[in-house]
Length: 396
Image (cartoon, rainbow, N blue to C red):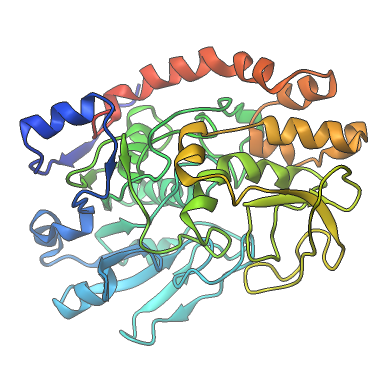
């Protein structure tokens, strides 16, 4: 294992001993004064003195309800040389997979350098030499195919090459209460899967950055993590801002591990509707009363089955708490496959990149149940939970 060259910036926990005991007894916290890393300026502002600073962030990096982290740093006189933007852009308005262009932040005049240009996902050597500290602040949702952690890891590699310190301002993971799904077979490594982790890894950005360095998934880099306060892995955390255009609600974020798998099939997962990832269907599905017709919108210019009536399931009536408890539910996938009854044509080539292994498609084609498929990866999940334990920054 590569030697870990990082310094974790530990914050003093605000919870009393009694509240810690309560959390350990499976009590669920609902936004009990959860404070994100960005809120503790005393821990990271000193790192910026006399430094040239770059920021990897998007619209979710709010310092307060009214002020973005970049605006606060600019107000405080931090020497920000540039803003790096991930998928969906700095303002979070670009649909998934679409090229994001370089621009200038109108409020501060700071250059915005896209890391989602369709070419290199890494800045030029000239740009990398122009700063000494990279501040990372993005709200993730804890899924292997959600790309913000990948952008962070790619930038960590670049920073390692140029001796740049990386400081992650951590945020809670709304799907941080469980781990599930197959571990990525690295032959399927792609822009939607970068590390040997399960579909639902259950870690915050700070934790996955720590594990990436410790396990050698990135090059050794000087890393600091400013922790959240009053947060653990049983905390119910409601996101104050939608993390991307097609995850507009907390309910969609909880369903996303299950319904995003339809991206690798011939079904619509609700892109081009008011309920992306909360509904799914296909023009040829039978036995369902629910229907919808995808249309181009701000979140999807060319949605699957554009303009064609689809029949399927509406999951919006399932209570948030039930979806939160169920976690990754592949029964939806197996049920849809059996309903369409078109065999191999049900799947697209990208399916393996999303699910991360070949055996899930094979088992579904062979008639396996959802329960049988989950048993197949259960031991891998338990091994991963042990592997990640030394890197966790918050109680399980």
